[in-house]
Image 1 (cartoon, rainbow, N blue to C red):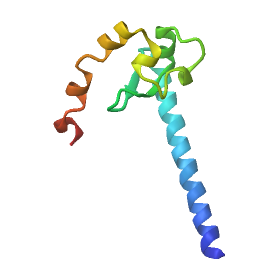
Image 2: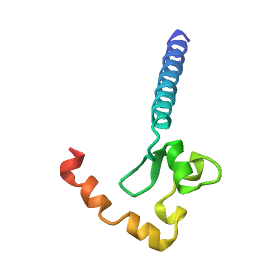
Image 3: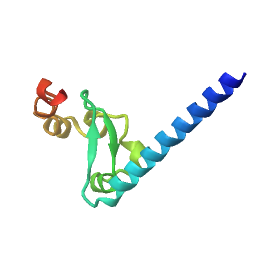
Length: 97
């Protein structure tokens, strides 16, 4: 029982640290006035700042962007142009090292 209590305490402590780091990162990104976003190798938006939400004119908040691709958010023509050359430039084997 003592082991489980200690394990639960450590898990909760780690979860709080992760949440604090996430909130800090979000605060820093939102303090930047330039629209910023980051995506995974498949083009799925993982995060953005408020300036990006406003720039693209999304009605609600970051949840309108996160977890989606350019094709979910824009017309096919815009999405095709937005993604041209992104993967080779940023996700090449040398960049992953």
